[in-house]
Image (cartoon, rainbow, N blue to C red; front, side):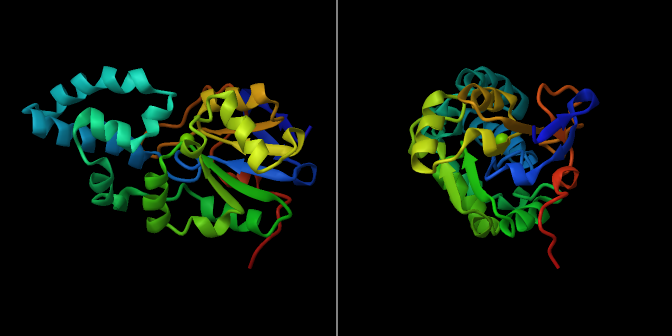
Length: 234
Ligand SMILES: [Mg+2]
């Protein structure tokens, strides 16, 4: 086993020699989820409320069940769906507030060391391709990855078997020699069902919220907890 689990499911160590591939989520894993939570929790309700004559709390209250219905589905991540549903140009609103798009602590160091390693480094995200473009324009994302995949191209989010079947067909990997890091435990459930052996989640996907104390998967706070054994860089 590459991972050994200590108390409260903290990751003790990753044996990188036992791995060929690392799959990395974007939002809440490499990037601070505070941006997305602020955007969907405040910016969009504010704009939508403005259009519909509602103040922010009323707009948030009205939109909450509409958002909840789509969680875990591809629509949840789809700018076109929300554009049509809410009557807003989501992409152009997003481009006005890109300052909040930030790396999580140590994410770039982790990626630099992964880049120098033997591993195939693959970004797999449910983010819409337009969101991915906006984020990759704001931060130098693409240079760290051997491949970047948006689940929208497969028409299936990471929560579904169809995503994994298409990923492994497009970018073959050995599930027993693959580590997948994602802040969503529902997504990790789906990866586990598919057969990926090494799964890690994050304790603090959103820097504006307290760290999670109960995770069902081995969890890290910062990447330094698992960086030992990766090539060092100057
Ligand atoms: Mg995520």
